[in-house]
Image (cartoon, rainbow, N blue to C red):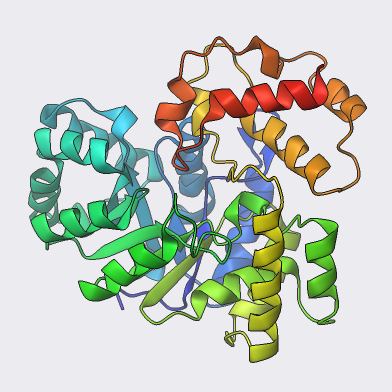
Length: 367
């Protein structure tokens, strides 16, 4: 479907960095490994790594491989435009940055109830359909972060949408804020192919609390990531599972079980159910490390890193003490530096009460 060879894709939001620049040498090697193993789907956005994800793809993928050999998805992000007149120039900028003449998919990015109104006001869907006729885009999709009822409204009003990218993983399957299952069911109801993002929930399902880790250890099988990614890939209608791979080691692990994909066994499904119950009982912050909040923070607080340390301490993982907090943030803004402007919360796809959660971090590590 859509020229996709396998149901596993390369998410290019968390690439390996050398300081403030993408490590092109490492990325090029990863692209080669990915392509050599029969995978061909790449996902980016203009807002990823301040535009450096797109240019890294030009240097490491599009300038080195024939255009027909890969599927490239980019996005129309709400922070990049405020009017219909800005959409076409933005697309041209993205095409140039990526070094291509067309995108296979262009997704209306970070869609929720409020942003849907902005996309409609700016006639983003209509403009995209015109761009499809002109050959600059092949397929229209959305990247969605809201409740199932909102998704149903969008798909009802715009049946031209060809695919839906949703946050989908075993921890969020019945989560009342994310509604993974309900959103998936709406996609099936409307016959829309599903693209999965955050299958390991920003690393949360890789770095598990000790009690949860013990469950998977008993299987004597694959990595934590393997159970999470294979879980999502096993659902009917899922045509793509994205992984934000930041190293060759991570890529090799992913390829080892996705090259010849096999759904989870009943024993593995039961282990996933047990791990899910343990995670629900923990006082964990459901942050996926997307860093959208950091871009909008005037105090320059590294919010996701703070939440990672907090979760580690609550999950009894080593290396998450007060001294670790002080060491990591010695020369950076602390949680207590928050000015409570609320910018972070308005940009959070998980709809987290970040200001309140930062106070919990202060109580845990600073008091």
